[in-house]
Length: 514
Image (spheres, rainbow, N blue to C red):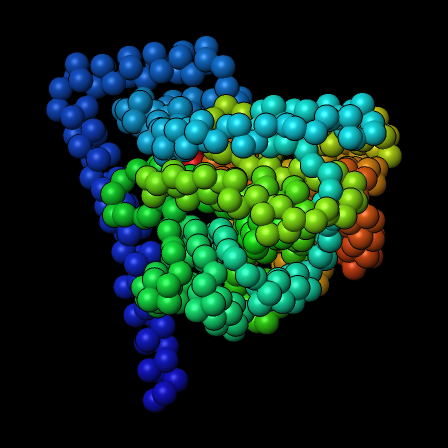
């Protein structure tokens, strides 16, 4: 009896939870919208002809305008297949129109604090001209400055990162800023929440930003109320409502923690038990993350405060949260560090461009961890070209996928990469969620940026570039150990199930739209 009660309770919670209700309401509105357009086109012949003429004009416009070719192809194919509705949907949802309200708020806030992110130290801190060019690009177009007087630590698994994070939280004296895509109920969050409540009682300023969609399914019940009751300031990003809009595609995928202005954590890890391997979901969950201490943490502080104030309609003097306010002494120096953020609401794809930079300047090797492999033409070409000119390019993808459809799409890219000389590995112990790049042991990036369309074009992301730091040695060692534990993909082992393979190739056409 208890078994059936538990099953019924689980089914009931799936059907009637907020995520299911919101998605169902949006689907109903979309179907209703499409039916109206189709009925109009059937009602009068001239209306149907008008829709088709509009579709032709929109296709010509998409071909003519500058933009990502895969995005253009996706819209062209969609409008050709559905001429009655394709052009209308492009007019409503195309060209990042849904996100313009978000962009207006963020642009206003970032403009107020542009001077807070000016490059102060000279860029010749970095030894190599090519690396200096990368640092200059991020400093000017991020814009996020390069810093020295910072030490860093790389974590090959989430449980090691969380062990240090918990200790740093316990030692916080002044403020804690947290921004995460997923905050999930479980033992990890319970442990952190208890510390945060104690910190508030001690007078520490605690603020949390979480993504409403990312955390919707798994966050604890009455989450926002519990935080507020404990004295923690909280903001949910881009709240999901039962209203049809593609603005919900723009999610806050960042993972940032700032403690007292001079300690910062980031990487692929969300605040959920699977990221610390406290529960098993898809075998062993391998992630990566970093801890930085010093002046470079300032970039993350400004990122957080810009997001916080942009959507709360407030402002304050950021200088009171600087790295030297609560750490007046000099910081240790260990190479150069450059945290950066990427927005889906502008025309500068910083996250993807940083990956391009490392592929293009590589002479010996580029090692990459990514859970998803859904590439645009430019990234696929860059990977192939690096391999063709003799660079040892290796990618590690999951051995046990978390999303079968996305995995099928990822596998559709593997064979063309292999033919160009790229080595692809499957992490056989389980699921690899890490997003790490390392190039020739001199430059690397660890953060939230997956090698897929959502990270490159739709999500708010962040990462940290390391130049000649000791943490790169640890990252390199982790790569070698991960290759050892993984299985290299060959033509014999790359099995395409007919249906899954067909779905993967078809979905590649429409992925850039959504």
